[in-house]
Length: 85
Image 1 (tube, one colour):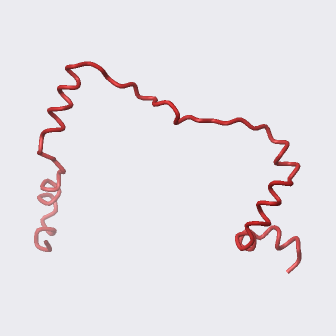
Image 2 (cartoon, rainbow, N blue to C red):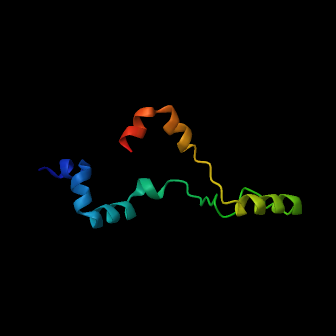
């Protein structure tokens, strides 16, 4: 296999990651790219709610043990499923 074909084949490059890393470190094209660091997840986008009424409502919802998954409605709408299960 020729050197150019080896260099352009991503599967061959996966077998030699050190060559890829050294090529990236010495690449003039990559080093000339503009660089800046983006950290969009550093600060939460959703503000915390400090309202006592909202916290009380959330506590009631969290304490409720009932979870409506809708599986009964799905089973009733699909009678053939009742025969299988």
